[in-house]
Length: 452
Image 1 (cartoon, rainbow, N blue to C red):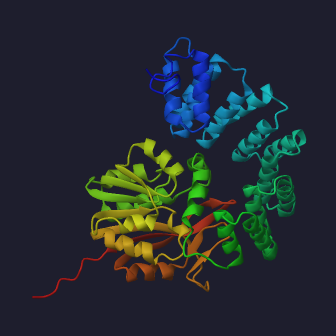
Image 2 (image 1 turned 90 degrees about the vertical axis):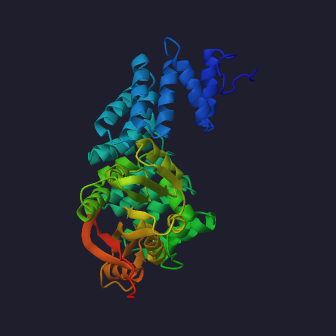
Image 3 (image 1 turned 60 degrees about the vertical axis):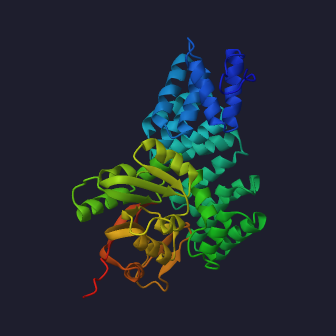
């Protein structure tokens, strides 16, 4: 007989209320499979507990199944609309998935039910910023701070809003308030360094990151941004732990954030694939290199007999898997993964805004050339560095690299790839300005045949 509360038979010896409590404990501990099994067992009861609906919805969102999550959470609110946290949580999920107007309704109801909750006002500020209602966003952040002067996130978010409006001296004040309240706050430290850099106060920016690294010598973010800001000890590419930490941290909201930035790289690359390869026939082995949440996957699938995806971030891969378009997904460092592919076994390698975390492109491009079949294609985007820049690539304070066009061209040629396109494009917008980049496509040359 199973011990009480085992996931195999979670309800045989537990009353429903105890089973719900157990599921919630396992949910908080990250034992998602066991928690989900209990929630779904409880879903078979009539009437269904509103708690079960809500927390199963949250779990589905964690698994990247956000549409199902919203349906479950809305059902829970239909059963019991009196819990402000449930409206707040629904607003979070809706906002992360880009359903901004619906999120507004959820947050507004949470604020009506709990007008003195600083966290609800902070979330309302985030929502209003997404709606471009900046005065209302600022008012909500300031209301959150008035309700709770110790609320670090509200100070940081207010600073970010002010910084986006070029009100940098005011933003510095907000970031300093956040750091005074919580000296180890990563978001505030990073933002404060960026604000100093934007104002041209480079020594102060460097000091922020140096102090951060002194306090947290193992912090990949502090190490990376100190190198970017100071120009010292700049790595050839972003370290694995930096990439993992950054992308795991915002995997849940990644797609919605990029949509708000008018992110164009996947569609630019898909059009390049069509222009170079013609109409799709699903006859190629295709690698989505740095697949993230899988935005490129549905666009590449029509050309793929087998579609592979690789990424360093487990959080991102968890969002890519439910799309159901990849034949294989792997968590791995990109260059090492490509080096391990069979020689000349891949027909198309596509990388959307991943190589901007590489400075030196030579190793990953050479690995790609070896993996490509004869007449195979490598296509990718990078951010643009002016041709008159002193160095072939540069690590920027925001943490990404930019590259000179002649450098990219030279790396492709050295790897035996024929560049077919090196065109300047706008990849997305940041701070209301377009981010300039290059859309690159290159074909592997057939080996020369020796004459008999």
